[in-house]
Amino acid sequence: MRLFLSYPSEERDCAERLRLALEAEGHDVFQDRSDLRSGESFHEPLRAAMQAADLLVFLVTPASVAPGSYCRSELAVAQQRWRRPSGHVLPVMLKDVPIAALPAYLQAVTLLRTEGDLVAETVQAVAQLAERAGGWRRWWPLGGSGPGGGGTATALRGGAVLLAVAGLAGLGWRWQVDRTAEQEAARTVAEAQRLAKLCEGGSFAPAWQALSALPEPPRQVDAWREAREGCAMVWLRHARISSSAKQSFAQFVAPLKAELTAGLAAGAQGRRAADLLAHLGWATFLEWREGATAEDPLAHYPQALKSDAANVYGLAMWGHNLLFMGREVEGAKVKLDQAIAGSRDRAFARELALSQAINRDDLQGWALQIANGMRLEGIAMPPEWARRFWSHLFARSFRESDARNWLESLPAQELLATFEWLFPQTEVREDQRDLWDFAQALLRQRTGHREEARVQLQELQRRLRATRATGSLADAVQRLLR
Image: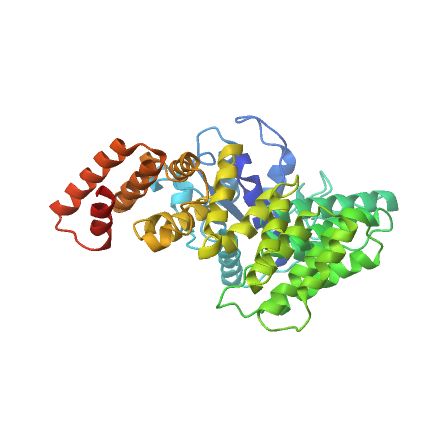
């Protein structure tokens, strides 16, 4: 189908991911627009593209349905094209908007409210609409009319631009002919680099699929290869395979390992070679973890550090693998600390360190040292890791055996400051209040603020007695008061 994708400018990244996924299914998607202010006249190429489209996919946000928005102008053209929107307009709720605030034209059709992945569910909805319409042809013959009966149109498909001949009704859409091999190479490389950025933004699968479909250009091959390698590496770093997935890690990493190996064979040097070698080690680790290979993943990391002694991925991945295997704990910590102190992708290094440290009794103090460093540098703690600090450390602080693992990890004042930074009092949930008060009182007592701690514990004891609460927490409050 030919699709017109309407979206507010601030949602361009989401629209890009959706465009790639739709094109991967064989649809032609018109997405681009001139940089016009709200209320300006609708450009003829956009009007013609709407006339040639089979379906309008409209991303619903407060901005897209606001009076005077550019999206409302596009919707008005759609209404001129299809008096009845059913089967021709698919509104997709991207951000909550009351139904009453939607234009009447959108209220006349079923609104898609996604429960999981917006891109995947939208692609499925488009497929269902296409099936109901009795199928569709991927290409209209040159010289024949498209669904809109001809006119001028502009559409994007896989980075190529299809131009209709202005003023010649019925000629349909034609591909622009690239004039030179240099232009073709530049276009391919630019598209590869754009897809690599999309991959970095989290759209791993569709970006990789589109990159794999790009032919090797006759010139600028290194830039084209670096874009592909970059996507392969970032996807490996964020690899997640659910328990219900049909694909194993071995199947997942196979094409990515092939890409990294090809990069090394092509002569990558220095930091680039180190990055490739480290990620080859990581890919092998993912295979090894599920028993798909007997190859030692640790063999790749020393080679990576020979090419770049401070390589963040070589250090961080090596350290993580050692901790995961229960080997050379102190040496692993040194490697991860070096990676965290470096100048590249420190967030990734911290993530690998915390993933192993927070839930291990012998490493929880080290995890707090990492958190304290983030506080001192003004780096925000991701909510996921803050929740883990709470559940594995501070929510158990009333248990002396558990608290002993980390109470001496930092100077008392820094430990209290890190606790209050991780869990500000104003953000504590009511069901966490008692445990939070005990943890803060315990840390206050250790800083010498004994009177503040005593008052806080007495109030906590009063609340517990009022609800007739007994058990470990009540006993710990009494013990600390004594």
